[in-house]
Amino acid sequence: MTLSRGRLLADPVLIGTGAAGGTIRILGGNDTNYIDLKSPDGLAANYTLTLPPNDGDPSQVLQTNGSGVTSWVTVSATPGGSDTQIQYNSSGSFAGSAALTTDGSNLLIDSQGDLRLGDGTNFLAFQAPASIGADRTYTLPATIGTAGQVLKINTRTDTTATLAWADDDTGGAGTSPGGSDTHVQFNNAGAFGGDAGFTYNLTTDSATLVGSLTAGGVNVTTGNDYQINSVSVLNATTLGSGVTGSSLTSVGTLGSVTVSGASALGLLTLTSNSITTTGGNNNIDFDPDGTGNVRLLGGANLVLSDDDDSNSVTIAQPAAVTSNYTLTLPAAIGAADDILAIDSSGQISFISNARTINFIIDGGGSAITSGTKGYLQVDFDCEIVAYTVLTDNASSTIQIDVNKSTFAGFPGSLASITASATPSVTGAQSATSTTLTGWTTTISAGDVLEFQVDGTPANATLATLALKVRMT
Image 1: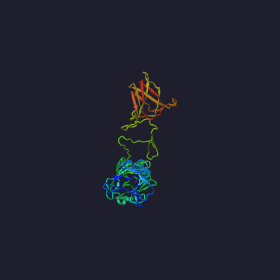
Image 2: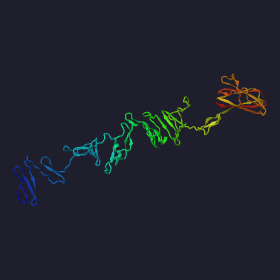
Image 3: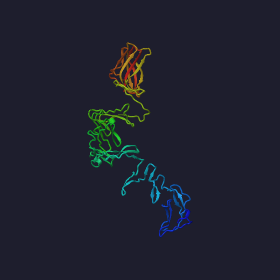
């Protein structure tokens, strides 16, 4: 119904026709197009909608309070889960999971969740291992690669790796191990190969070599080590570039190693705890680099054995050394019967073993008479090798006998040691001799010597008997 001046009557009622709801039609300014506000068909009950007092803000929607009063509101929703969790529809509500999160740049699928790529029916999943140990980052190549290439680690650190496309170098058929079970693998003309002569036992964690690793045995190239149980037993730096003829005679034990060829070591065999040379009277040379030393550690002694190893001489280390010191050997060998002496700096030198026992007979200005002239005790073991008699007169005559006794038997056991070759001077001032015919030349530490003038001495008021001895 249309009223003048564009006004409707208060509380107009629009009645539908048949089963159709009533409609309010609002015409446009050209009276051609219109907007219909229509009641639902078959409305079950009456209700009233009260419009807001204003037109709201952009993007707002009309919301009812459940009693027919409407208002303009901004559409919003509360996310599910916790901060950083990605949202999904959970029975019509927002939800999140701690196993699927993002920091705005990275997607984290936790708790061994799958990254699934599907075709609508089946999927292909990528999953992390149960234990990673630390964060790992793999960077994919920048290109797609070519047919047949494989992904390989190009560069890496402990936690990152850059992947690159590379040609498949597994050798075609070599993608399967060669040989038989337990055979150690090697490159056999571009494919994996194995041989019964070189096997590995997983149960005992041991390798068995039958024959040799190279034509001559073990060949350790320069700068490499040959190891057993993670211990270097052969090293190219110390043994040279060709270490051949080696063999392992028992699992985990280096039974014997033979070094042959033009090596400075000659023919060297290591068996158990012995190092021996074979053939050609070869030396065993220890040659430390620079100022390095050959050392015996752990209080070990140096044992020098005789030819049949039945007896030996041991140079023993002291139980405790208070400070380091050095003993320097002489530059040349000494004379016969020389002995070694050490000075305060540790320099060892050869010195003469000869000593002199001097006994002076003094007449006090008067001529020397016969009889016992005194005693002398010797405090070291020695052997008499010569005598010399010296007097104060060029025409002296004197004979001096020497008697010997042990200290315990002194003086009763005194007895001559000169036999018939008594030291003497006849009409001269001096005499010397190394011919000690019949002498008892041995003197023990503690022995007492008695000096006695025999016969009728003449023209000497002062005389010296010098006994040259060598310590024993």
